Amino acid sequence: MYSDKEDIMIDETEESSSESMKAPSKGLGKKMMIILGGIIVLLVAGGYVGYSKLFVEKGKTQHANSKEEKAREKIILYSMDPFILNLSDPGRHLKVAVQFEMRREEDEPKVKEISPKLRDVIIMLLSSKTTDSVSSPEGKFQLKDEILLRANQAMEKDVFKNVYFTDFVMQ
Image (cartoon, one colour):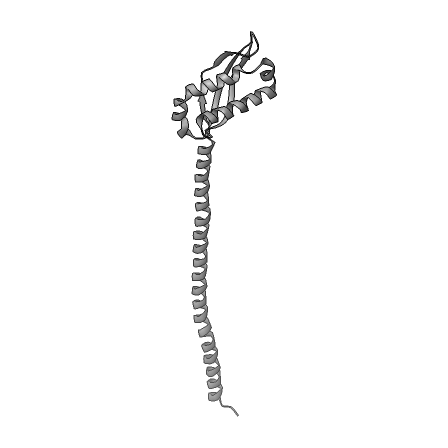
């Protein structure tokens, strides 16, 4: 019933229809590959930019914070000449060297300016003490607290953070 011509035509029609089906999928595949490649490139680039902004900026901030912490950690000490004085006990002497830890470096000129007043405050305090009151560790801690309190009162503001005895000899 079919002739050879019809068979050839049917075969050609099937081939052309199968080619037409394949052709768009090849074109569509290339387009999809290009689009997917572009998306991947954008994702990688976005990830890199996000990573560098997040972690590089964080590192810079941490570095800046560590510099600020080091500046805050810098200890500013003000040394006074040693004190040699009589205690309130007859015949008892005390030699003590004192250093003050300051809160701010800007206050140092003011401290130097009133240094005689500080020396007087410390001499009056130390000469009122007995050997028993300053010979124990607790007595020394109490004495440091009293010196700190009176020194800050003499400065009329909270300038000193701590007091250190660098020499402490009783005789």
